Image (cartoon, rainbow, N blue to C red; front, side, top):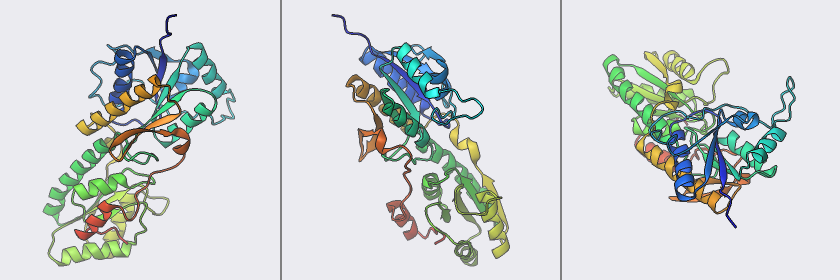
Amino acid sequence: MGHKKKRIGILTAGGDCPGLNAAIRGIGKTAILNYDMEVLGFNAGYSGLIRKDYQVLDASKLSGILTLGGTILGTSREKPFKVDKENPIDKVALIKQNYKDLGLDCVVCLGGNGTMKTANKLQQEGLNVVGLPKTIDNDVYGTDRTFGFDSAVNIATDAIDRLHTTANSHQRAMVIEVMGHHAGWIALYAGVAGGGDVILLPEINFSMEKVCNTIRKRFEKGKPYAIVVVAEGIDKPNKTNAASYVSYCINEMTGIETRQTQLGYVQRGGSPTPMDRILATQYGAYAADLIANEDYGKMVAFHNNELIGVPLSDVGGKLSLVKPDNKLILKARNLGVSFGD
């Protein structure tokens, strides 16, 4: 009796980030060339699954996308389990029906924490699901590294490098704000890589007095400038952004001329770094392996330098945050970097 070809769906949900196309290609090419599967790509995240809006991904569609930023499938922040009072249709029922109608064996969901939470709920509803952790914030629980992070750190570090030269010329304090709502991974890595003097993370309680003392001492020692790297999610008054708050305080408390830069969405754009291309490709290929082995309900993760599948039920709704005793923080402190505490 002939064995039925496996048929899988792929979707990208939540914020875009570099490496999504590399991951789509990694899943699709491995599934098609190695396992003879059929691959569908759902457009605009979970809403494509709700509306049955998809494209067939064949080898030619997956060709030439490795280096592209963004996602060829488009994305959205659609949350199928959230009831819309204006339009109370049963999105979950639609997803289950479409999954059945299309004869899918599995859906691969690429995204961050929210996406994994939804993926786990769909798994509990009886669908076969595999997750891939992507976010520039590196805050998905259960994996040591998410793809998109390395690219964002590269972009942020490049920006800090450029600020050194202008800060030095003008004898100023420069404050640069990078992304990271609850997690300070980008600020920590880019701050250390870019030689920041002060690094402020959401995970570490800081005082502006201590920050200002560090900067004052630098100037008293004849250092002509200071670089302060802050994560957007640091503790601050509601009405203002992190960069404005920190730069206002430094100006007021020290009298040192201070300028601020908010890096914003630039960190999420552009072509992925070689490391992110490799990581996303490995994640994608491993996802196809899991599906071939019918090992569903897992998120592909990188742990202690090896690829593993972590149960989706362990991942959804939790965050991977920087611990105050992180080795990189300890090394940075020994180099004289202040974390404002």
